[in-house]
Image (tube, rainbow over all chains, first blue to last red; front, side):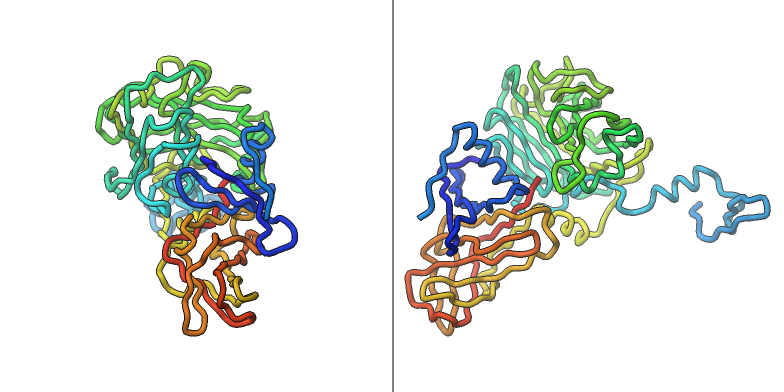
Length: 58
Length: 370
C-alpha cells in the first residue's frame, strides 16, 4: 500500500467510520476501522511507527 | 482399477466385487481422489480479477493473480504476468521476469507467496505433537538452473521451514514435490487470520539464509548458494499447479470447476467491473447523497476495504429520468463481511426519499485479504 494521503471519514454518520486513503499508484481505498481488516492493521502500524499521519475528518 | 462396488467378506477383508481383494494402495488412491484436499487456492492460476500483468513499482507487496502476492524490499526488480503457457493439463502459469542483474542486499527479499487462512489449516494441528505431514507439489520452469528455495512461515514470521528444489534443465517444465512434517511448536493461528504462508523465493539476502529441511525460530527464506533470480537480467521463472495436501504423497492436481475456485477467491477479493449499467439499488437520503446496498456473493474473510477509482465522475447516480455524475468519492455507510451500504455524492438535484441506482463505469473492489 503506497499511501499518498490518508484522512478520517464519517461516511455521513456523526462518528468516524473509515479512513480514506489515496494511493500514489492511483485509486482510493476506503478502509473500515476494523481490526480484522489487514489494510487497517497496516495503516495503524505506520501511524504507530510515525511514518504516516491521518488527517482529521471534515 | 477403481473401486466401484465393494463388500466385506467373512474374514473381514474388503473385496472389490469387480476385481477381487482391495490392496492398501488402491484404498489410498481412492482416498486421495477426494475433493477439497488442496489447501492452496487458485493453484492453477485460473482466476485473475486484477488484470494480467503487474509491476513491483511501489510499496512492499502487491496482489497479482488472485491469492498470490509478490513481496519486494526494493521496487522495480521484477515484474509478473499471467501467461497462457503451462504443462499438459494446465492452461495458465504465473511468470516473473527479472528487470536487471541486481545484487541482493543482506536483508532484502523478493518473493511470491500465498497466505492460507487459519480456519483452513486447523486440521493440520500445527504447534502440537499431532502436527500432520503435508506434501507440496508444483510445476516450475525457469531460464535459470540450480538450487531454488521456498519456505513455510507462521503468522508472526518467527517459525520457518525452508525447502529447496533443483531446476536441472533451463526452459523446461519440471514437477517438484516437497514433503514436510509440520511444526510441533510455535504459535499458529487458526481463526480468520494468517494461518500458514507459503513462500517462493526469487532472491533473498544473507540475513535470510537458514538451513533447509527443519523448523527454525526465525524468518529465513533461502539457503547459502541458492539461485537469486533477480540477480540475472531478463531471467524468467514460472509456476503453476501448486498443491498443498495432507499426507506424504503428492496426488494429481485437484482441478476444480471454475466457479468453485472463483468462489474461494471472492472470500478475499471481489472486483466488480464497471458494466455501465444501474447496478447498485438504493435511495436518495437527501438532495446530495444516494445510499446504495451491495450483498457479497460469499461471506468475506473480514470487514472489507472499499477500493474505488480516484475519478469521482466514474460513478453516476441514476434517478427518475436523470443521471448525475458523482462529485466526491464513494464512502461507507456501513460495512461487514456479508455486505456493504455506501454513499454516493452529487452537488445537488436529488429528491430526498426517491429511489436511485448507481452506475459504475470503472470498478469497485471489496478487499478482505489476509
